[in-house]
Length: 451
Image (cartoon, rainbow, N blue to C red):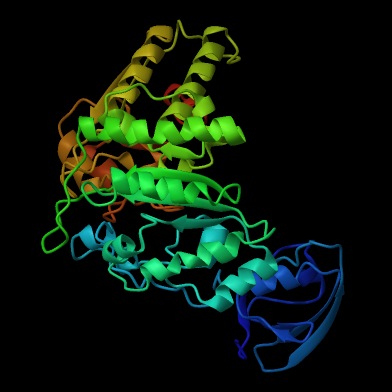
């Protein structure tokens, strides 16, 4: 418990906290006489209609503040530490961990491995359960913190210990039994990072069979292929999946999808988009993705992109974009993408240019030399690769980069190259395209405020 309280970073204008003269720099000590351990305690206790806050001012003076409010009404306080506690680092050394595959010399924050159940609840991060104590499980059940996202990898206890390099990793699976026991109401989303020759084939079937028994609490499971960079010296030997491997994985997943749909009306297990690309199969229809609950794991991102693009292109053809005349529009632009999504971006650009003949789009495929050619997703592209591979090319009046190449809320890429650096090195204006298919059209046509 934190006897020193939690530092308040900001107070929302017009909020209850502002009305009570709570200001940045104050510290919250307790609510209703109970010390606040972290954000879970705070969010749970602050829901009540009658509160007694103990606030410590910067000069050490303590105020006891009575608050009457509506149930669930927010106080309007933002804390200096979002978790109101230290972040829990991962105690595993997984054979597939991408952080272990990064080169030296990058900024320190990129090497931090979190395995914190609170981030699972607040931000959707996936946790292995190895860092969770019985106290953590008790609080999840008490506060009804849901959903919790779990990286299973396998339900074979011995194999899980091997994959996570943690002798407690197999035992940690028993925590799921507590989370789903009785009528807890706790929902779980699962993830399996598949490693060729390790947890695929019979082991994948076993895992999905075991996980199916956790239904309906376990809402969904995504299966994603391991990402392999070129920085794997001294690490567990892993090989990339080939076409036949991907076809076998998809067949296994489809078996469970059919079973789940018949029994529960959903599809339960989902293949990330990469599997269909590796297998050279069409991306399935939207109905497979159950409202895109596993989108952050790359499940259905391409389908959603294409469907949004189709809908917006139909609107453009019908003249629904008021004030825009496709016949008189003239512009030459360029964009860049990773190798995985490149064919789909090319097809979208071709179809858009057919509707707007004066729009010339150059789509540039960027090979990931920084992490190695096996890394094909756009989100792991670096500024130095973009600069090196686009130098000297005719890029038109604007280079459009997808939003997911940027670090969240920042204007720089994974390797700390800023947008301004790319503009200077390539002598071109750079704009950022939001991630949706509709945004693709609006951005290239300058209808979202870009020029």
